[in-house]
Image 1 (cartoon, rainbow, N blue to C red):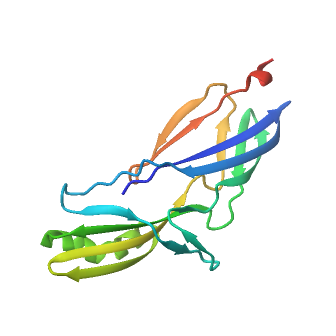
Image 2 (image 1 turned 180 degrees about the vertical axis):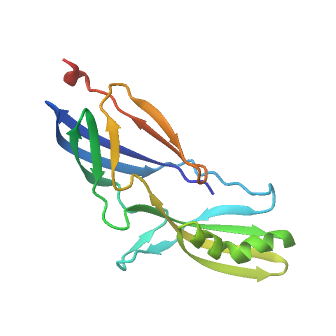
Length: 183
């Protein structure tokens, strides 16, 4: 499954000084389900519960922070933003299930928990094998950036994409002046 999220950091700078900042995050509704190779797995999102490390329970999908404070400072015509996200930062939790009737697919189902831990995700899984059907139900927790610090040049209209090597991840930054600030 491919989940997308959006994080927006709003901040105000007046007379070349950081004044205030807030952040919001949300999971986007267009969850994409795929199989590699095609038609090997049938996957779907499952509604369930997630227990955080603090012991609180939430329904899945769950996003830890939907709003958070952002601090920052201006130095050398650049803004350094520090989203205040306590350890382990922002994350989402989702429960999904993948089934296959093909013997080749059993390899992934049986090893899904180990593979995900190696890709820096936390998860629990339940594996079921019955009548030639292999099923993995996986509760996965994945960290969401922004990370500890973001530094951007203060240039009106700045827009760029940062494509990272790991996975299908695209990060876009956009900086624009409000009309009231241009005058």
